Length: 193
Image 1 (cartoon, rainbow, N blue to C red):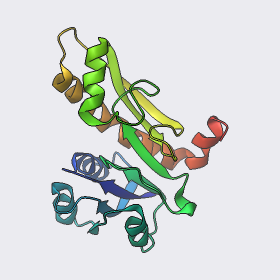
Image 2: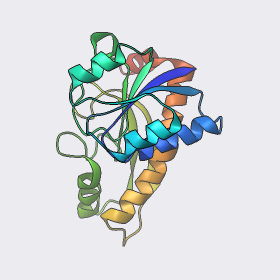
Image 3: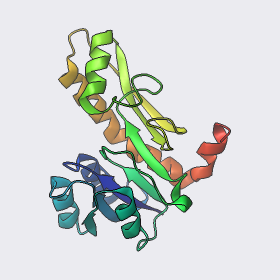
Image 4: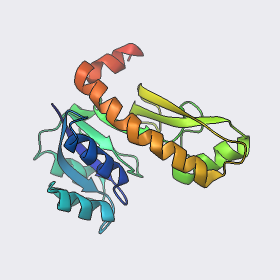
């Protein structure tokens, strides 16, 4: 069973999704701890209601001090809007989800609604999400799973966001199950890192 830490910055929609998949026995994971880099967000309230240990920590150093008290296999960036620097022993075990098909619409400045606005402005007919391992650069680590969504001619940034989030709700648990089944090193070796 994969033991995960969840880092978030907002409402905890991805936490809800993980919790639901775990409860329904569709994901062989256990959430060990939830940490927010923003105080008093809904995601922390949800974590407490679910019964997960939950904390506020404003920077990587503070987060890592909290994580030291928990045994985790993977750290999930679940709507965590900050570049996170993990402890050395977890450098290859930080997982992020990005709301586009990397390598398109990614990197510094491409997050949240900015991505969907850029997709719309380009007239793309396909978008999606990418679950990947994080490294020292935004949206640059080995890809674990990608899921595409078909766009319509009249989709705006909001409707694109809705379609992509629905894909994220399937893709992130799928990626975690793949890590559970194959291990983290499989994905790093696959791209020669």
